[in-house]
Amino acid sequence: MNDQRDVFLSHSSANKAIARTLAADIESHDFKSRKLLTWFDEAEIEIGQSIVGLVNSGLESSRFFAILMSPDYFSENGSGWTDAEWHSALHADPDNRGKRILPLLIEDCPYIPPLLMHLRYIDLRKQNYAKGVEKIVNILSGNTLSRPTRKNGQVINSNGTIDKTTLVAERAIPQGYPEATKERLRSNLFPVISLPQKIFIGTYSDSLISLKKNGERKLPTKSEIKEFLHQIQIDRGYEKIYTPIFRCHEDQIFTFYDLNDPKNSLSEIVDQGTVTVDKIGDLLGNDEYYNIIVSLLNMALSRHVYRCGLIVDRAKYARYFFPSKDGQPNVVRYKSFKNNVPRTVAKPITKNEIVISWLHQGAFLKLLQLGKKFYLLVNPTWVLTTDGSNPAGGKDVARTINRWTNAERNESVLRHNKFWSAILSRGKKLIEIYAGDQLLKIDSRPAFCDMDFGIPSDHIKALETEAPETLDDVIERTIEEDDYEVMHSESFEEEYDYEEYDLEGEDDNDLDTEE
Image (tube, rainbow, N blue to C red):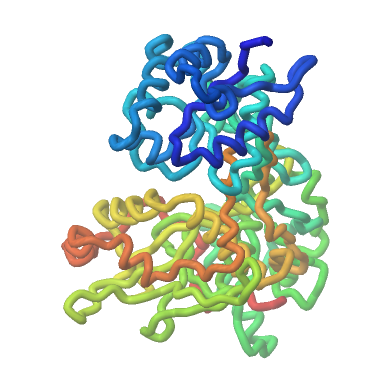
């Protein structure tokens, strides 16, 4: 009889049942021209035989040594056999360089000896059992996983997915063997499905141009053009005065509105004989035109965000947040994964029943181009205000917000992405944004990549049914005594020391409402 065994199953007598099941499952698999073989005490030691001698023989003849880790295995009240077995295996190879020792976690195990803690284990608990057995069989059969290649940078495919071969280097593991399991990684980039197709360009009408004393032409400022447009709308009897989306460059107007349509007030400020219509795709390769087009797209985005109930932080570029609702907490309802759920998006923070500030749900939102595609970038954040609408500033406040944001983990980030997607899409499959007379369409599903390596059983199924975290939870979870000190310190009233967010002088009542 061949005494060679593939794996020695070291276990506590209290875990005999799972050891017996594991032995049977391993031995049901083929290896070369035979079945895999385990060394399992009750199958090896007969009545009257030497336990010490056969255990010693089993340790010597087994290619691998498996530790079925559980509280009973490491219990000080045990017989001492488990300690003797793993001590002997570790003594032969203290750092497990030969990879002979296989730690198998069969139960939650609060205590693992320091000499074993550094070893990566195979999880055999409950729903992970079948996958764990598969890993054990692969190792015993010599089918180990190849190491991943470390990659730097990102590439986003034309179909809206992130190319898995060029993920950021942090996701790759330079040493060790990652799990061979399917995993989908979602980003905070939402693919643009279609851009506005046309951009209209026209030269200023002579009525807008005056002469300087030296005879040179004096071009109007954008503020002066706005006043002119508003007067045109007043003369036409418009019930609501608005500022259409446009950009000025040298002596020309750029817009998504049809400058040939007399219904648009912009048509009156350009010389109709100079109006040209260009395809946006043809101009994106020109740096000068590219910046104008991206600026117009983000202006359209800002109008859409305003219609969704948010306001802009004029002191911090591209940051939007929900204001209070007439001095009261602001609660919105949105479609989560399956249900319509409420979320408090603006709430006062009190101390000793006195309102010291307000906490708001916010996000940095902007359209940008990666490769040949455009995406909506969503970076969720929190905003502190003094009165429910005016953001507070100062380095202390920035540090507090950063601490809260940095403490959030994957589950919170996924909740935020779903929340902003639902708000901006108004519960539809697409985020549709009016860009002048045209539409900008964005997928409400984020760009993603499918990985062949990942972490088994690391998917958050609870997100599909559980209600999202509210600001009450955030306040209770994050705000500490030192945060209160920050909120009513002198620096709380300081202005943000950031580049000014240029909204071209528009206020909220100026926003385009023509849809």
